[in-house]
Image (cartoon, rainbow, N blue to C red; front, side, top):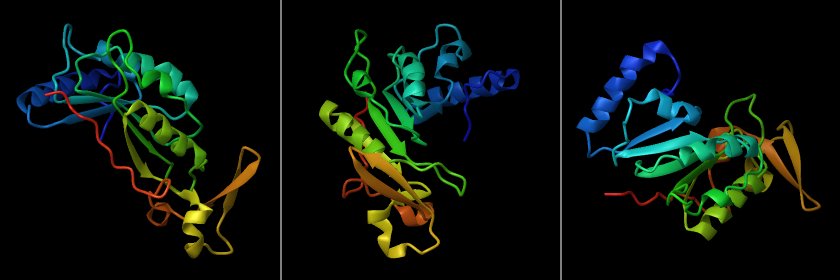
Length: 204
């Protein structure tokens, strides 16, 4: 796992080898995810266009990074899929303007969401991924909920809580929602009563 679009001289040759391998394996889908979506065009050979077996994605953690990065992702028309990894999700995010096609005919085709893992992780308000799921459903965009991460809604994991389990509160429309730090393996990935494992249609 690596961000192949880092601006480093030692990656130039390795990136060329990767692009050659992608071209040689048209029956494989390659998911290229980056936090540096604004650098992608600069790091590609002049005139290069992604083949249809490439899914190009950008990491989006909050509304500020969404506003900054998604516009660069939607500049690319050649990938089969343009996707977002909203993980770790650190705030509410409105993706609705980008889930419909722009003047180029491009849109975000797939949204992945999840909470942060690890003992020092930041909790995720359950309202944030739920809102993303609803946005995707309205726009008929595929949605995948990967994990709650280290923190999970108390009402989902009440049977495994201990007195010493750390609890955090979020306020939602005048009510309080509690999340507990129980670890990724116990937190699971059920959102709104189900698993969300949707995948986008690819361009053949």
